[in-house]
Amino acid sequence: MTDPLLDQLAQLQTSTLANALDDIDFDGVMLGLLPAAPGMKLVGRAVTVRETTGPKGSFPVEDFKVGHMIDAAGPGEVIVVANGGAPVSTWGGMASWAAKLKGISGLVCDGGCRDREEIAQFGFPLFSRHMVPTPGKTRLKVEAIGEPIVCAGVRVRPGDLIVADGTGVVCIPQEHAEAVAAAAARYAADDELAMRELEQGLTFTEALRKFRKI
Image (cartoon, rainbow, N blue to C red; front, side, top):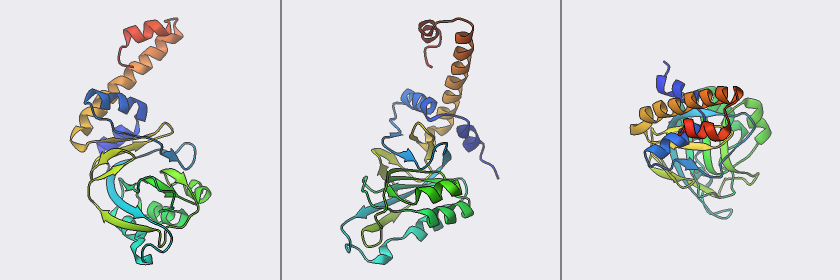
């Protein structure tokens, strides 16, 4: 079963969505998270994970519950990991392959991931603060799954909408998602009109004046 809202958001850029989020005074831009490979894009509903990290040997191996994260998510969902920006890997190639086979839409991590080449080969959309080979076992503990988190400075709740592309990552509160998508679609339509009028000789200054919300 398709989700019309996800289909609509998939057609929109994060820049345009950020414009629409400004209209509701919600700063949903997650700063500093980059795609594992060029051209990656993801759209989905958040499955939230909160982690903590420490030096090697801080936690039992059993606390590194990547399998639980994958088990908690499904098609149309994005795993969103809050790890405080720690340069420790919480995710790699094998996890990406397992998630892709399950139909999970991607992963956003305010922390570290590894196996960039494998992730790119699998085509699994992943956005993280670090690409780092440091293992997560005994350094990382999954504290909670399915609870509100703060990821890269943005509050994310289970079911909020996540969109990521080459420009960045945004979170859209679920109760505002339809209105934000509609507003962003209007911004995108104005962008297209402005581009065509620029081709016909309109100056950039004139375009900004005519299309005030591009």
